[in-house]
Image 1: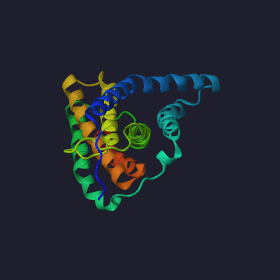
Image 2: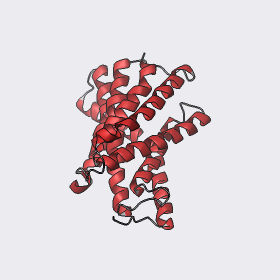
Image 3: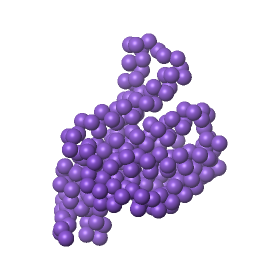
Image 4: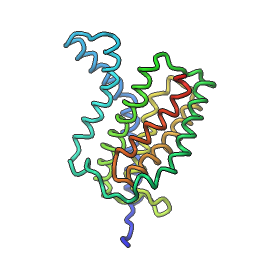
Length: 231
């Protein structure tokens, strides 16, 4: 049995600092930058119809995330050795999906969040966000942190790969972009919720060796969350 290797306290603090920097920076820059980039292209190529324009702009997030993902070495993008098949991990889907469904009920009943355009929201929450965020966080960030920390584990009491923990922290902080939509207490709850969700998504990606596993899980939890606000 191979002995586990753990990152040092110095590297652990360095990884947390990088996660904070990456997550917060992206939270306030990436989507606005994509919006203005899309407007520039739309003006240059003449505006499409408003319906097509909105769907195209939403798809840009996934496209830009894919650019990040395909910028990493091919070896980092290829499926990794399977530690555990996805079918054996399916029972772990029950609790996160149930929590996501309850989360959607809270959004609708307590914060009066409801869909104004069901088709657009479905495309955004169930297609663009799962693919975009997974390519970015369980793809690009994962590869960056893995290369920095050589696949070492986080701590002896928390034997998860360092890249799994750090990418989850960055993923959580990415949701600071919602600061203007909700109260501080709810935002803090969302940061905790998305950090724990990120750990689960990263766990699936690590165990199965495939980013498609975390994409599938992300689609399902976003669908469960959106269901009540779309009705």
